Length: 357
Ligand SMILES: *[C@@H]1O[C@H](CO)[C@@H](O)[C@H](O)[C@H]1NC(C)=O
Ligand SMILES: *[C@@H]1O[C@H](CO)[C@@H](O)[C@H](O)[C@H]1NC(C)=O
Ligand SMILES: *[C@@H]1O[C@H](CO)[C@@H](O)[C@H](O)[C@H]1NC(C)=O
Ligand SMILES: *[C@@H]1O[C@H](CO)[C@@H](O)[C@H](O)[C@H]1NC(C)=O
Ligand SMILES: *[C@@H]1O[C@H](CO)[C@@H](O)[C@H](O)[C@H]1NC(C)=O
Ligand SMILES: *[C@@H]1O[C@H](CO)[C@@H](O)[C@H](O)[C@H]1NC(C)=O
Ligand SMILES: *[C@@H]1O[C@H](CO)[C@@H](O)[C@H](O)[C@H]1NC(C)=O
Ligand SMILES: *[C@@H]1O[C@H](CO)[C@@H](O)[C@H](O)[C@H]1NC(C)=O
Image (cartoon, rainbow, N blue to C red; front, side, top):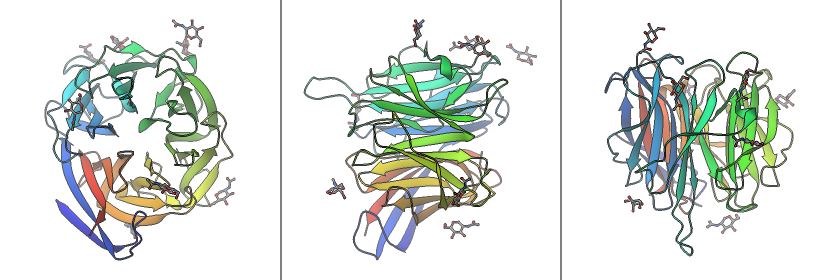
């Protein structure tokens, strides 16, 4: 499907009368391949432009507690065509429940011939307690993976990474991995947004911040090294029904106070956030109270004010993740949930050309 949105003012172009081109492909369709439903996508772009996407493949029902597998697909052309799904964790039988796949790219180095490292985390929620986080890694762009190892971080007992993606800093603390997630999903743990980091390529992690009452989150790094975290929340601040945000100027060790961003209304849902140099792109269902209207917005002032770029799907739409190539100012990838009757019908990848003329 091709969609042209004309006459928008673009963050990356100085001309006002330009166009955005969007190509969208449904990659996972509920009711196929032994799974009732596919949900909670994560997607990352590698330095060589391979795009990886992983999802929760829910077997018997679409419910959050259904037996679930983690599956992965790869694209070599920026998200237009995709490989067959590979099941990384789980099986088509049994009652195991794995949730919140969370991908992170740690770029390698051509001078030391270090390959790019890709981390995949997920939570084993088969048993109520404890919910252990596991990590797998790939050094060949997602083709082959290590076996899953439990992550040793006691604060993660009850915390889910993501949804979304982890980032590797390029500016203030080059090489530092920053991840975030939320707790409060089972007994005895309060609802908090949690941020943690690794300075040893994912071998160990340290929690740097806990945000009370915050939920699913995404971190992005601007070109000047400023980090932004953007949160789903339960609209306890009912004056705006909008996303909450905090900023870090020291590579994620300390974070400023939460502010609410009236331009980013939300129906209480996960959202995508990615930086392209000094421009931020945000994706979510653009509605105060319904999961509909998947839209892309951009900010050129560090996330304080936002303008509408394009609506990807006016109908039912839910979780989304935004990814781009660090050197590309023109293309953006968005993996998101959409459907006709329900947002949980399929996982779509949108390839967006922001500089189309
Ligand atoms: C899965 O759980 C259901 C309900 O608790 C149970 O009836 C069934 O035997 C379980 N199956 C396996 C393979 O453990
Ligand atoms: C997840 O937990 C279940 C229940 O304890 C266990 O049978 C399964 O092996 C675990 N999976 C992994 C990948 O450790
Ligand atoms: C996780 O929390 C539960 C309940 O508080 C506790 O029993 C368990 O020992 C904890 N596990 C880990 C690995 O910290
Ligand atoms: C990226 O690297 C991987 C691993 O070396 C390779 O399989 C893949 O074909 C590469 N993709 C592109 C687009 O060059
Ligand atoms: C887990 O990490 C703690 C420090 O954070 C360390 O004391 C402990 O030995 C580690 N456990 C394992 C099994 O690596
Ligand atoms: C609630 O959000 C508004 C912006 O819509 C902000 O001005 C206000 O300070 C927030 N209140 C609290 C308690 O966070
Ligand atoms: C990134 O943004 C800065 C500040 O606006 C600008 O000076 C620089 O040219 C930009 N770099 C690229 C590659 O666009
Ligand atoms: C969808 O988003 C667009 C752009 O922000 C907005 O103009 C429109 O009113 C929204 N539609 C609904 C039904 O909320």
